[in-house]
Length: 179
Image (cartoon, rainbow, N blue to C red; front, side, top):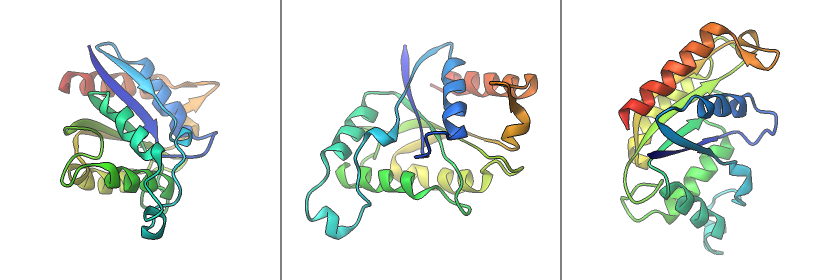
């Protein structure tokens, strides 16, 4: 059985992206999905001066963790049209522990599903477009993107409405078929 790792690029403990990731993980039928919290990896803000003091062991541990899986689901908030600094920082550290020209996410390219949500109608779509363009440089093979706008209209009383739930089931099934 293929193994997928899912995480959010948000460092907000109340992030709606955590809900989105957990919902997608629960919809897996053909794969095993594990979630991680990037907050569990102590990664200082990347900079050359910081790097000269040594690569954080948690950067190596994060890459080793990602390497154990066959595919990734990344839920990224959109901050001013781009990924949040928290996620970009993790990617920057992954780039420093990856072999020259190698995948940031492990020993080989990995299939990736990129998702985002927001209270607004755009749902983070601008960020996903940019991330999808960059992902091949980072060692990801984007198999799909999904933007969920108007989160709080679609998620009430602890669950998504029927239409959104069906969309998420279809999204997860489609991603699993690509593996």
